[in-house]
Image 1 (cartoon, rainbow, N blue to C red):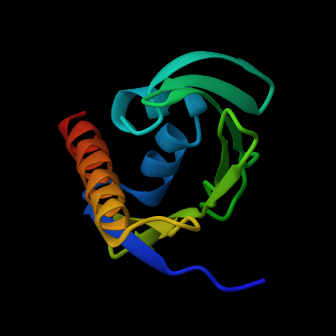
Image 2: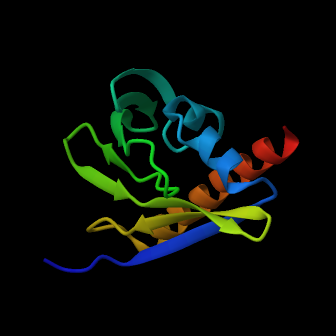
Length: 133
């Protein structure tokens, strides 16, 4: 067992932590800002199905909680699970959303950087969406 390289990407949002959490804790909301997951196809409880860029994926979301935890596991078509820690935390009167990206075994530097850029684009979309409402 080894420790994977990781990168935590964060963005500040000019909304209260409760407002940000209440929106993002709803798995269906991911379709409005998380382009990396693709199009939602439906759900069975806490497990949602999405049509992603490389085919259908399942996503198991953490149950709603009082701590701002939005962790989820992306389950690829080959049954590989990718753990995605995500948090909503207070930042003054606003909010910081933190997303930790782990480098998957065999992932090139270029792909890891591209995935980090994609996460930042998605978080920027979340910020734009929430600050416009």
